[in-house]
Length: 218
Image 1 (cartoon, rainbow, N blue to C red):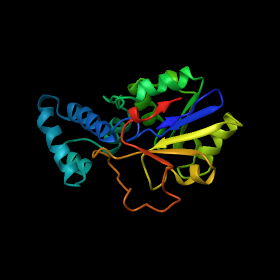
Image 2 (image 1 turned 180 degrees about the vertical axis):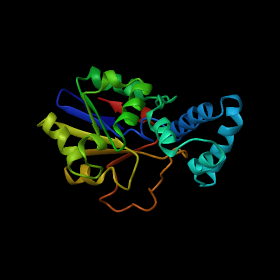
Image 3 (image 1 turned 90 degrees about the horizontal axis):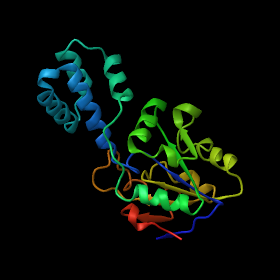
C-alpha cells in the first residue's frame, strides 16, 4: 500500500507484536532468569520454563517452589533486563523512508516504562523517534483518548497514521479521531491474537498488511 508522507505527517507505531514479536521478549527474559537462578544448568531450566509457559502453567510459581527466589526478584529481572530482540524485516528501512520524507515517528504502547524503553533501545529505533507514549508514564492505556490526543497536541494540524496489531484496542480511538490506521496481520507468533473476536467496524483498521515491506512511502 502507498502511504503519503511529508512534513505534516505523523506516523505512530505500536511496539509489541508490531515492531517485533513479543514472544522473543519473553524468551529473552526467561533466559536471563534461568541464567541467574541456575547458572550451571540454565539451559535445562530455560527449556522447562518455556515448556511450562506453553502449557499455560505459572512459571514463576514453579521457580519459587524449586529455588530460593522471591517473586519481586523474578519480576525485576523479567521487566528490567535488556532484551535480546530485533525488529521485523522492513522496519528500519520504513523508518528511514519516513524520515527522508520529513515525517515524524511516534510510539504509542501499553506497558511499564523501563520495560518498553529497554525494548526500544534493544531494537535500535530510539534515534528515529520524535515522541514516545507509554501507558505507565501517562496513566492511561489504549484505547484511552489521552494516548492519541498527546500526539495531536505535540504535532497539531497534521495527518496521523497508526500502525499496530491488536484489533481489540489499537484502532478504536484512531478510527474515532479520523486517523489513518494500518493493521499488521498476525504472523502466527503473536502472544495475544484477538482478531477473530473483534471484527466490528470500530475495531478494524482501514488497511491491512502482512509485512512492513508492503508499505511504500510516497
